[in-house]
Length: 264
Image (tube, rainbow, N blue to C red; front, side):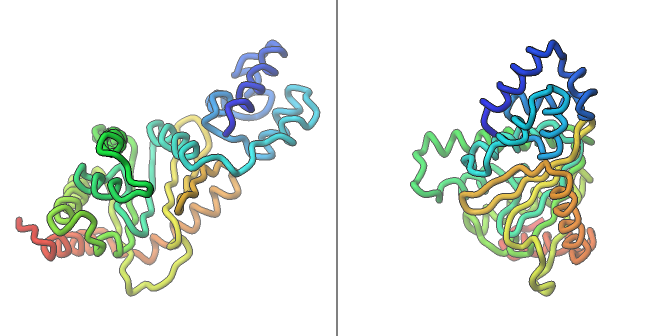
């Protein structure tokens, strides 16, 4: 979201002599949601914008000038990354690659080194460090609660070669065995399903509405419209219903790691 929009909201709120909490109460929103909008981390839904207009007596300015969906993917991902750090529950879907917060260093480096245009060694190092920093949310034994829904293709594509894949898959196995992450695999035999064509992350929070983040090639978007988030949650759970149960998923993970050369 454009920070100019968030700055303008803040200016109007302060001109009206309102605190974030007072505006939140008047607009039937949470204070943290207002704070995220002002900081440029969230985009209000159309209904939120209309309520803000009414609360601030700004006509339809906030509704009419909602940011367009043409921001850079990096901007959307930065917002998603910050939300990821605040989430109490995260549900990941990955059709092709292991989700970022579950990646090992060597797997992440193998992925990040094949971008176009090619990244320098220094840039690749920076990106790897950033990705590993994201995984630190798993250092807490409980929060956030993380589910990972993986297409079988994630296990079969040899990113970085057999040794890197064996290490990566066993990393997911250990996280799952330790009950830090709940992992389910959708086998090839399921065929096509609705969310197969993009990654999807669902996030829940203590004091603000849930959001979703979807990503494709050079396209990324944070979704915070309640109706859209609800549809994406439904699509995720429909796909989850086709996945292997936990223990069968673990068995497939271990067998695939063994095929790559891992030995217990």
